Length: 287
Image (tube, rainbow, N blue to C red; front, side):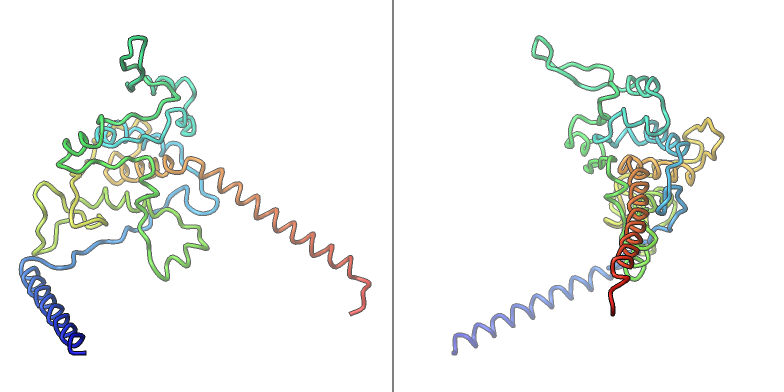
């Protein structure tokens, strides 16, 4: 019994000491900077593909592809997206073939057992700008840029209770594009007083993984030229690339929604027929 009591006393002393250390650390930390940093929630945007009957805007997707090619592809890969899928953006087979040929991919081995490079084909996938993840991290201050294939689905910010309850009925699934748009347009905000940002990183109040991120502001007004006369602003660029990345992550979104609508209509008609059949079969049966 004495051993048990002495053990409990020792455990209490250790916990008390640990609590004192934590309190001291928190006090010292709060003197330097806030213990909690503000994270802004993305504002819900008006997307053409939103809702149960939403569809992609092909013009917007083509502009987003242009932004990815001219800006994002220098750091970010799309290793799960084949060139042939670009026909879903409204391009012809010849246009897709010409677009793919602008990229170079590694192939082989050849007859001599060596790897070689060749122009990409529609059956190939978007190549990575770096040979491997280590090289990608070394070229970007130690942080390898994420692959963009599924980024619009992977970066969806949960909206919490009670908003998510309404999202079930409205079919809201655009939290990923909302986050991407907010992140790309949030670089101009300044960090709050007392907040220290690691050297080589950049503050963005919409970034969900920390106070700052390694990626510098990637877009600026007039950076990409649009042939269709759309505004060449960061706001428009951010919307277009977010929509394109949503398509990259879910290229069959329109087919899925159309199939779901047909299934619902079928179930309604089938339920009505079952009810009418039941009424007819049991019509002469006394209650």
